[in-house]
Length: 380
Image 1: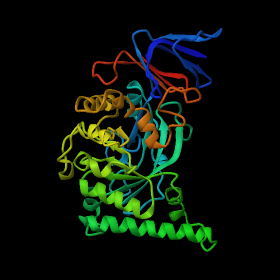
Image 2: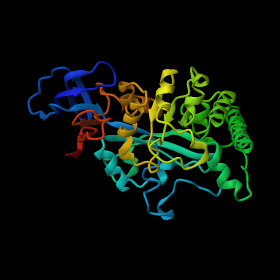
Image 3: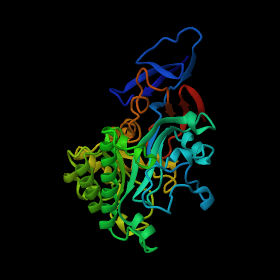
Image 4: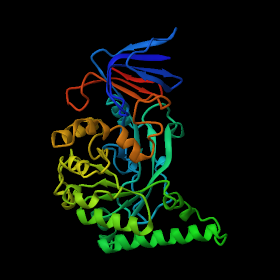
C-alpha cells in the first residue's frame, strides 16, 4: 500500500481537501480523506506544499500514431486511399515507445484518447489508453473502441478534392457520411431480422448506432459544427465536437444539445482558413452555455506536455479555474467514456495520480510525481 499525505487534494469529485490523504492498494484508490493513518507496512509519500490531482487526461490526440518529425514512415494517422474507413482501429498503429509518451508522463498525463487524423470523412476508431506501463499496447487499453472519427471541412475536401475525387465540397462530405450511416442502420436492422451475414466493414458501426460510443467529429467552422449536429440528430447518435474552434460564435445553439466539446489546439498558429477565429476564450464561452468541455493539444499539432498550460490559458480567458482543472481531468474522462476508471480521486478508481509542486495550470509548476495504477512512473 501507498499513502499520499499532507497535500492539497483536488478530487474532482467534490470538495478540495486541504490537507488531504489518498490511500492506494493493489493499483486502486482505497480511500480519500482529510486524515488517514498509514496501516502497518504502508509506504508514505509526503506531499506537503504540493497539489494532488487525478492523472491528467488528454481527450483527443495522435500520440504514438503520428510521431514527431520522423516523416511519413512514422505517420500512420490517415489512410488517404479511401475516404470512408470506419473499420480501422488506431490501436493497431500506435507505437507505445513513441518518445512523446515520456513527455506526457512527466507532465502528469496518465491517459489519452488516441485515434486517426481528419483526412477522411470517416477515419476509424479511437481508443483510450494509459501513457505508461507496458511496451505492449494491449496492456495499456482502457476502452476500445471509445469513439468513431468523422471529419468535416477543409481536411477531407483538400485530401480528395485536389485529386479529383469525392469529396470536393462540404455537400459531398455530409452526403457521404449520411450514405454510410444509412447503410450501417440498414445492416443493423437486417442483422436483427436475421437477413444479413456478418460484414466486418459495417459491424463496427453497431456500437455507434446503439449509443455506446459517439461520433467524434472534427469540426472547426461554425457551419461544420452545426452540420455535424444535424446529422447526429437525424440518426439519433451521440456526438462530440472536437476542436470546436468557432464554438464561441454559435454557443447559444450548442446549449442543451448534449454534444460535449473538446477545444483546441489553441496553442498553435492559424495555419488554415477555417481556424482564423481560433481563441482561448472558446472553452469559457461554451462552459457558460452549459456545454461539457475538455481541452486538447491535438498532439503533435501542439506538444502533449503543454496540456495543463493550454487549460491555464483558457482560464486566463474566462474559463472558471476549477473548470480548467476539470477540462483536463474528469470532464475529459467523461467525454472519453472512461470516467468509471479515471479522471477523479475516488475509492475504487484506478490509482492514476499526479502530484504537482503547485497550481498545475501555471507554467512554472513542476510535476513531482506521476503514478499509474499505483506504480511510480515519474518523479522529479
